[in-house]
Amino acid sequence: MNRYMISAVVFASLCFARYAAAEDATLMGLGTRTCGQFAADYRREPSVAEALYFSWALGYLSAFNLYIDKVLSVDLAAMSVEEQQRYLREYCDKNPLKTYWEGVGALTVKLKYETARNSPAP
Image 1 (spheres, helix red, strand yellow):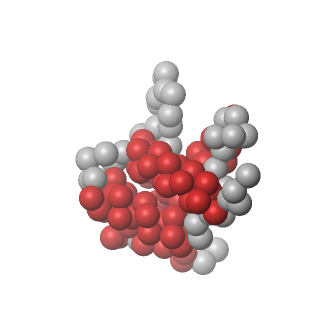
Image 2 (cartoon, helix red, strand yellow):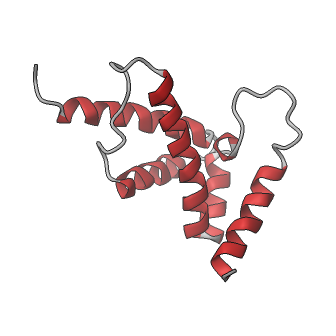
């Protein structure tokens, strides 16, 4: 197992440990951490933090698309992965006290805008 994988496993274990005992939660995982916590994690291990948090974001967005009306769904390819990651980093830099999932919610609105903007007129 290479150093990157070991770091990722240790990092993920530490991040998820506090959520294991949650009894009644609507939302769980890295998305419940603050943007300030994401920024601190990103400063320590940028590639690991980006991969773990963004995986959570993609799961959230995918579930959103699966359970929402097709009219309201978003095209996850309306922005490149790099643009989406940059959007979340910038959101978190500007809003350190908000949660990461609030940033993902803002990204959802941005993706909806980009989806509509890129769609052909009826």
